[in-house]
Length: 607
Image (tube, rainbow, N blue to C red; front, side, top):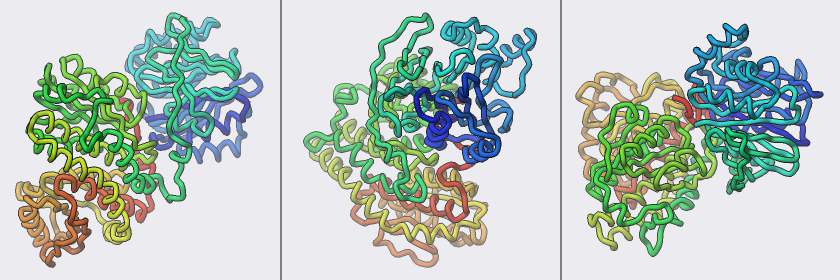
């Protein structure tokens, strides 16, 4: 949510800021703005809408010209999307951009109003700008340090002071921020993808660290003005990984990147044909000690956890609870020593998941993070860490991140079952070998994308859809339904097929689309019976099943076939692909902005 960039160097600052912000559009936003030093004066340009709206506005009103400044894409929290509420926000001498939420902004605003400050916007961000201005005594670092001690909540701030041209200041607490280091230029950004065109070298800002950027030097201080020596990191992503590469949308590109992403994620974690997670801090002895497992996540990551639950419980015979992070953190969960809490997050900065991680640690549980973003808060704070190697995922609707998350859950489940003595080396090696073959299987399924285009063409006028399945197929239905509603804006629900008669079947009428997933052999006949029930009531059924099954007319109107030689346990790796493609093509045919669906953000860093 929200994106921050900042630049000091020799290039046209406005061009750099706009380009960097375009790489952060995936985070979700409803307005954008920049502030640039032009002849030692701060010039601000901002607009409701997309970056294209801001660019058009600058064509008409003039583009700020200079070599240093800050930029922002805003996802509205306080105050409606508007030009006035857009960032940057300014006091008399200070201009800032902000990601996060200031929880005590009302009390601070009341204080400032009493002191004679006038506010133009409805945002919590302007309160920070005015507070900085109120305390400013000519020393930017001392002022920032003073003000942040009064702020409650999460924030990443990019700050410029009118009397310090060609200098950008930054500080973070909870919300992510990095400092990029180039040749005679420096950057700040919410994500390294924003600056890959210019540099791969960066510092990770820790909580309450203040960065001071100038053209020829960059320094980082703590709140006590002590200069810090930081480790310079290098991004292992290439700029091409954050570009479309000939695909119409990032989402389609990322769906087709899944075979390689799975291969890159699992291959280094296999030794002598067996899972080997020692590099992640996970030993056989530690695995054998766990009594209960909790998987805590949000959205798509939570659905990956549901797949993991089925696999872990089947193989390792250890109880697994899958929890929505925003519920887990507030319900006084019964977690204690000897338990393992797995936090799954693509960004590693999801606010509720990070809070759940800290809660789990305070209760004495061991924590394992499964994340894609190196150096993220969840990655740094977990006891054990498995990085997924999906590369940058730009589309808001997650696809390849989900795929590598479930791949990791399989590896973890295999090794856990071995550690618990619930399987032997021969069976564990067999399962691991099957997992290694899944990238090729996914590649084969992708060859049938035209079938999903045809299915999508029949869904574009639907008002509502239902996804059904049992067992692992139900877990898949949850993810398929979420993908469709996220980007097509069609109302969609997933339901356990066996529960239809307990209420949901009342929603079925003539022409109601139902996407049924039936890949699990032990549940197949039961699922087919449920499908017949909705078909008898007029549903239009799309069936995702194995190639060898030929449905009668009383079962399905259309079938998407999957290879027969996939083991039931690993079927989610293949079966999710048509569900992703159906969602994608339905959205395309409805004329939606596939990569940036309305009201959604890629990285949810606030509650």
